[in-house]
Image 1 (cartoon, rainbow, N blue to C red):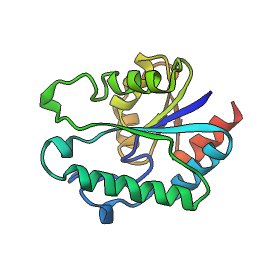
Image 2: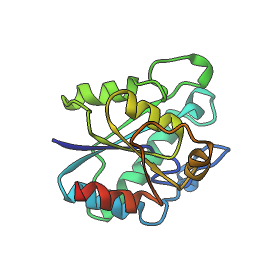
Image 3: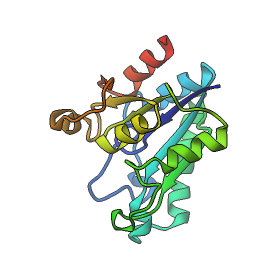
Amino acid sequence: MKLVILDRDGVINYDSKQFIKSPAEWRPIPGSIEAIAKLSQAGYRVVVATNQSGLGRGLFDMDTLNAIHDKMHRAVQAAGGRIDAIFYCPHPIEADCHCRKPRTGMFERIAGCFNVDLVGTPAVGDSLRDLLAAAAVGARPLLVLTGKGTQTKAEGGLPDGTRIFPDLATATDEILLV
């Protein structure tokens, strides 16, 4: 099975320091929706793994998160693609949970649900925590310079083998070549 793991905020859609708290605030980064469609059309299972601490902080509720994800699903479907699953961590940083990236809980759940070994699986993120979680399970970390990506690159400390791309569309072209 071909699988790709994508972070949400800063990779698929514009990020916000105040969190994405409503469907109206969710705006796709140019080319990201089409990139997801290309991946699914090429036979990839597309999975989103996203920290959503705004839920645990009470900034939005589960119905709102579902509505945001519904908007994302509809956009991808309209482009001819699909997102196969969305995994999220609802906990704030202080919760010290196992699922919040850079910890590997979400990635382990993805591996279990899809019955796959994540070694070599492309995992696209814009922050160091995305890349560290990917590398810890043997996935292939891909940094995009959208969202926090430029800052992440400048701060350094990237896992060995991290590839860097301007955006999800460019990373997708590389994924499809492998």
